[in-house]
Length: 496
Image (cartoon, rainbow, N blue to C red; front, side, top):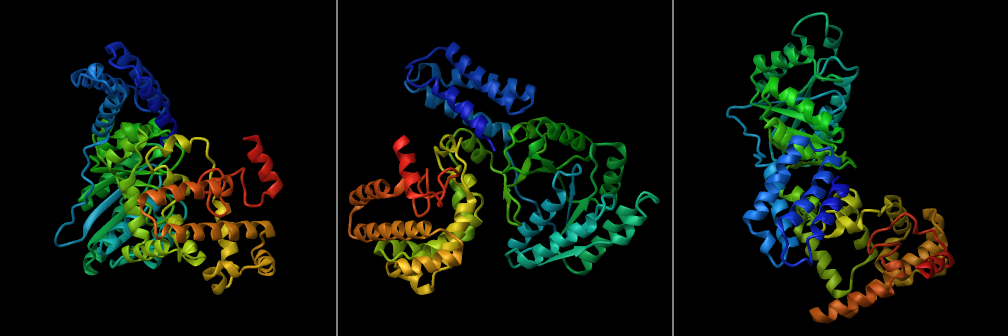
């Protein structure tokens, strides 16, 4: 999300590196570049000016101008100010006893409320709470049916010990607009049902509009007065920049919002909403939506987002995602197999699938320190991983365990079964055999020997990658596909 912003701020910070002791004017010059970058990222002007001036004053207070490493010192100043700008955050939703805790979601039409309702239900379910979701959006065509489909999918597929239920009254859509308080009645009956069913949480999916207007706000205020929700969450589309911030300000003024959910946080938007909304509205960001899956809802951590913006990565979030997809026992088993040189294509397929469940490859790599700049022009082709998976799935279990038995005849059969070219299969087999041999050699080495072996492995791999990879170790890139001929690959390397 913050690629362009990260690149611009990184360039400004690098301009201070290597100058030795610098002057106040150098710091202000660097912050002028940061100011431009923030404005281009659609951050609120007032927020930008205050942020930049605070950074300058902090730098002078820390005596960055007298530091021997002013670039690093300044990164620390900007990081702390970014954290302060977006936080502090109370990420928890307090549950009441006896239940249910009523959580009301509001926002503009198209902001992602319905999808967020499903993600929030999955979030509660994973933590052992029973949750009911009520469809109070009676204005938008088929909104009730859409939410029902989403919640049934959560109940069926989301992990966790909690239970998930849906309350909807599609017949009331015909009455909407003709009588007062129809949506309020639906919410009240949902609350009664949630109490009778001993649910811990009731989530209300309310109506939205294309813009903030009195009709919408009066309806939301009526629901607020009738049910007195314990928490009001505003769903804001992160892609809409300053429009999102202004609508959030309007909602907060009328509804006294308890927290904000930034949807579409994994998009290619400029990031201005994330950096502005807390300061402009006073309401904290509690969650961010990071994808389309039910579990793609993360608690908001300002310090982690600041790290991503400054190219420090977000290893903590990456580890948390990994833990949710791969158990400790599975990780230890894979590590042990690698250490013994017994890692098979079946193991590789299993690990590859676990990594893909964590999110898009480019997003995952962006969480690694220093990778932001490298990924600027990278176009990672997820379809190539599908092709690789198809090749492995076309092998017999015996072939996946013993890749060495895959001769030319077997390769032809695998190619026909997977729809791949024979060269693709041959290349995958050869590269994996090479990796296996290197693992076996490394199994008896010390740390230094393993480092040297890894260097040799990276040199030996065509295009510097794992099976089917090009451009970056371990991940396929567009423009260096698995289906390239060896002649084309040779020409490409020769050009480099």
